[in-house]
Every structure is written in structure tokens, then in C-alpha cells.
Image (cartoon, rainbow, N blue to C red):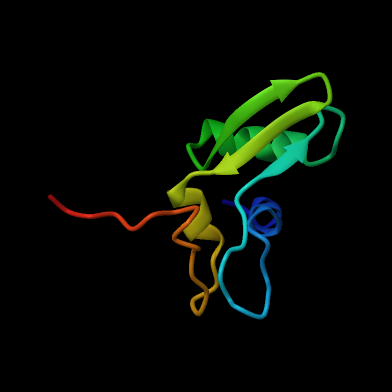
Length: 88
């Protein structure tokens, strides 16, 4: 994840904020937007997914790997959007 992608990912997570925890996991991006190519590169790399495609653009969500790559060391992911992984 490059610096531009990391900044976009952090914005999609609602970071930074006073809780140091993600507050959402989505962004809408139009094909004409400057952010479109970096988001599609994250999708290709497995760091994000496209949830919905419409005439007004795409709704992208970060995968756990993408979200974790965007965090600062003191930040956490909201378990509502990223449930804990349990080993069986």
C-alpha cells in the first residue's frame, strides 16, 4: 500500500479520530475521480473489495489486510466492522 492509498484507506475508516478506532469501512468513488485508480489498485491487490457498482460510482470496502495496513500503531479496528478472528 503506497502513501496515497494509505491516506484513502484511512479516510474510508474514519481515521484519525479521538477514539483511535475505525468508525466505518466504506467509501464511494466515481470512475472520473482521482481516487478511482488507487482504489482499483487496492482491489486488485486484495486490500479492498467493490461492494456495489452503480451509475454514480462504486462503493469500496477495505479487507482486514487493507484496514490493518492503514492503521497507526496506537489505532484499532472497530470490531463491528472487523470481528475478531477466532482460531478453531
